[in-house]
Picture 1 (cartoon, protein in one colour):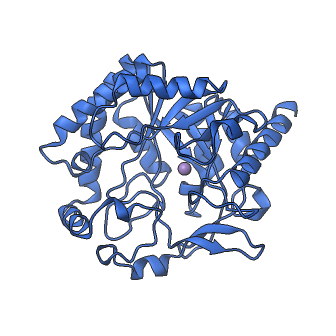
Picture 2 (cartoon, helix red, strand yellow; picture 1 turned 135 degrees about the vertical axis):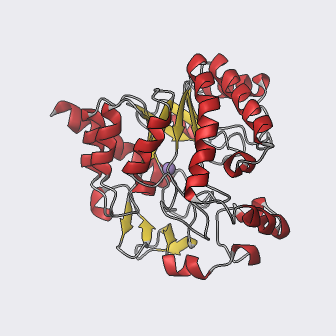
Length: 346
Ligand SMILES: [Mn+2]
């Protein structure tokens, strides 16, 4: 397993110099942020990014993410142009020797929380999702407390986009995902790139929008669309694991053994049966997930790809990008190191 860390590029206050000092750190997960969604990532930008990472003795091990244009998710006639561009981006990444590309297929909203600055009892700040509060929010009125997603759109634009989704059912979204994968996966295969879909977060429908990357059954359906290691998963324990019905250890062992787990996000949550969940420190006893069992399942399943500590709390007075400060994620990395050492020596 390759210990990795997400980095948001040159303006990320969590610099590569700092990341390099985390014990055992090998890989960087990042993206190009200044190419509009749907456009081709140019080769020179990819090479520059790779060189920047390698300058710090780290490996650019995976891209997270190459975003999928909404027209593809909606299945509009304009999608072919964007799919063509997506394939060019994959070819370019493959040429640069980057072997894993993460994406998601969530309509309009990426990960969603009811609060991103909840103060915990110990004074740390975390991200929480309270279902009742989310149900009461109207995204069109700008009532969302999201880490920047809603501000991607003007309110009028957002309203129009949500209207376009009104008639799209879950099956419709599946059809559009299938169309996308059937076009893109063969190119990924030829380019030595493994795609890794990130599960929906939370793994259920919000604001009436369909969500389909939500549980084991649906992950199975997804990998069966095209049976190829290039059509794989980025399993995020905190995303799928916020639904108590998802047995994370079992899911991870199943897809590792099938060689469809391409990337692992390691994060703990405290959940309840009413669709509420709270992001907590990575340690098992802080939340609802058994992090030892999860990692052991990945090892037993033969998983050897990148793992990264996902979202951390804000601790020790750190300020920064919600979920992506240095300190708590570095603690998560150290915890991963400890668990892996114990698993392998046992
Ligand atoms: Mn994740």
